[in-house]
Length: 544
Image 1 (cartoon, helix red, strand yellow):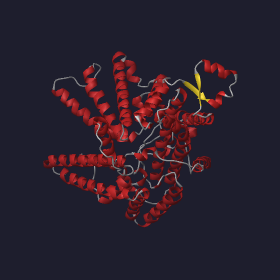
Image 2 (cartoon, rainbow, N blue to C red):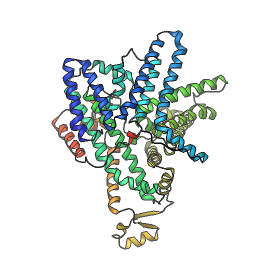
Image 3 (cartoon, rainbow, N blue to C red):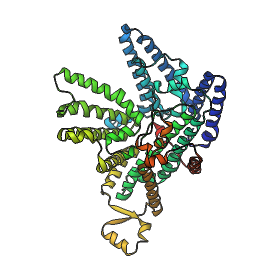
Image 4 (cartoon, rainbow, N blue to C red):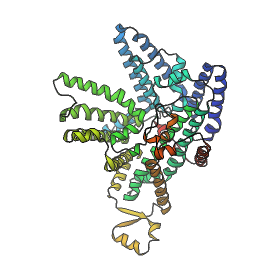
């Protein structure tokens, strides 16, 4: 079930909370077991088969993790432990690969060799990508002796905890399980207020902003998917509009997940920190989908970098470090692992050529950004040491390349993406809705002489609404503090604390507090979101 649904808000969540608190008065163990059961119900609500598919995977991973923990006690078992870890990672990758990439691989082979393999319909379990990464990280942490002894109940609660089950944040066992062990499993006023505030902020982002933009962005991409030309203005607005849509969609989901978890006394890690305010692509990935960036860095990029560095040093070649970084070292030890990591990120997001290109683009962007920083440090060491910000120019460039890459993320086909990109650079000319021309009088003739055309497929109403929604969303994303900043004094997410700037000036005056003023404000935000229920709405990241 969706978080933005009446059955979740008025049924599942209050019932789950009430029984959790009742059990907690008598037995913490019963309360936590109830939470596991409720999470299974939540996961099975969409399709009962989801549970039948995912439970065997959970059991196998638990058995592998138990074996890793037993082998880790004795250093003489290091080789067996490593083989068990490799088997566990291979199993999870194969599990994900079968359900998510079988049809894509068959289609790619058909495209490449002109074969005619039949594509069968394979049911994709909800949240399989997030669950798989979480299980892989757990196995690696057990192998690294970073996990204390655990029971099946502990493991099941960690994997199945429903707020983060479908689309993250991607959490580590050692982040949440100590909290469950300390949790009173009883009603707490602060947790309830902070949790509900975060939930309704997220609901507003998702239902009011993301779903508000979606109906006016989708027709642009649908037209491009059919190969019909899209002129400059709708192409640009489609790219920027979708960038804002997916930001508020996914950051809204993350806020809701963090808020729901807080109702149970658990703090999940922060997943978004105003990424659209970033002034470099490096800064952007430190703010966007933070838990994914953390996973990719710790479990893919760092091991790859370490392996490449050892190989390079063994051959007597210089590694990264200092000001005199060679071009070969940069390509082999920074650009290569960055591009490979982002390639995996793109493939993880979706089984399609467009996602792969999206990942590769970000890999290239990140490599160029790192290269620029190294060059700047070499040419102007004193300035580069203290200034990693790109300023206004860096912000504009970052927003532009993020929006361009998002065209591939949204477009269903490469053909559709190429139409949008061609439109953005003026290949298909400049056009305005025909109904706008009718009200311009003499100005219409002047515009036509400057090759501004009439577009009958795009109405003035759609143009006006997309302009309004984009302006509103962009203003909120760039000018307002984010949810975690407003509640920073109450640590809404794991490790979030107010900065020095947030403790004074305008930030301090805007900070959330359990007051009547804020109660009315949150009630208004909740009402605005709930009143928009009923229209088409789907979390973009549920397909992953």
